[in-house]
Image (tube, rainbow, N blue to C red):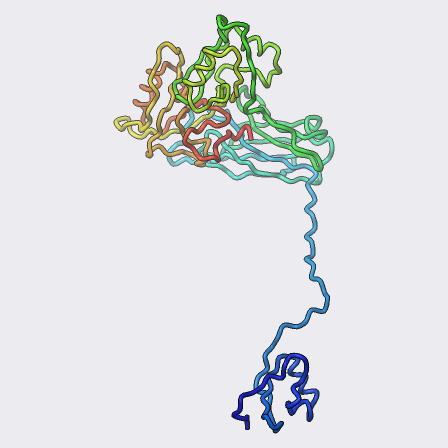
Length: 398
């Protein structure tokens, strides 16, 4: 029987001298060192081990090391199919009951390397899909085929070829014109193993322009209707034209480009215009203009557009509409990606392929029923005044 007296722990340096196990069964007394609790009578009479308390095993000096995962070997060639533009007729739009599915195939020597996802009812397909290739000859051309599939079957929309000499030395980062087309392009990146990707098209740059006196005009015809940026309508004789004459083509100011910052001021077209009027020297951040084709479901002609436009200014002589606000009922058609949406500041330059004055373009939209294709111009960077960060740069400049 267990003694009713208060049990004594065997201590921390060895077996208790009153512990029966220390006299009768020394091996059992080692239980104390493993966390056993002994009950002993004061007179040294029989006691029993009543509890065994497990303890953490002592360290034996082993160091645990994680097995490193083997480093991934980069492919010999990494191809990225970004997207395509200019594929559709200017008056094309999705037809009811006849879904259009656009995809791109990458081939080398007739062998299929990659087939992208098929995107539905889009005027400007954007895939951004990678293709890793290891078994490829050093002199192999890459072919890009763009297909459109509907209820009538597959239709080849265009083909582009990237010659071996244009990518096997340093890679490639740019657009390829589709054969038998003057305005259709596919945007492609090709990165070689152990080499950095080449820089792509320049979406924005800084230029510093100075005039010799305040009496000389900078020579810019500008639209400031969106209230945020200044858009270039004409580059006339003056300091900016002189600057263009000496600059590299990628860093010249072009018609339709946007001034996003002037002498550190941004977000106010009026404030930037004041700098151009009253300063002899200006530092400007130029943002390239990019053309986008967007499918807009206008709804029934009797319904309001749910688009508000900036006030017309006859003195500007600009034949396009500037969107001021976009209502909640305006939804993107197609894949629903950011470039297919309408944003404040967008310039509508054509409706179903037809151009016209601001008044005429607005009338075309109001009288239209159902879906309509809009030609939009917007800055390549920072174009979405109230849009998420994910669309801060157009896909063709990523």
